[in-house]
Length: 127
Image: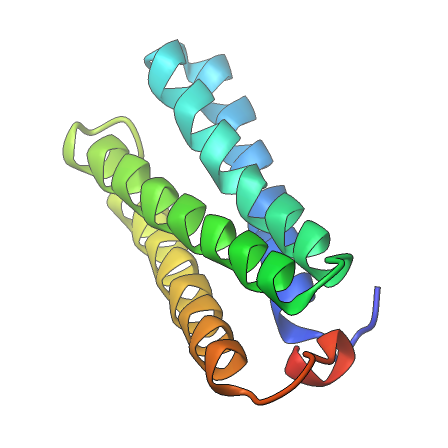
């Protein structure tokens, strides 16, 4: 992984934190379906970013980034729900919510700039 590739680094680090949150929730016996939901959507962000980097076309790249954006939004929802139902400590939830928000903003900027770019997209330059 390129160390200067911000979205790859941040989405992977976010996924690691989400896996750790899931393990914590399971140990604490907190609502298994909610824990599974946040695990699926939270790790899917990075997986879709990875797929975007390997996209075969500009359209494929934008589509995968769009999916990653939607997964970040979904994860933001599940984290809010876990916080507001006292399943996750507010401080931990806020930290993860801030990361999800940052990922959403980065992905939105990538999508917008990719759609506005003329000609074929350069994955290396876009990230």
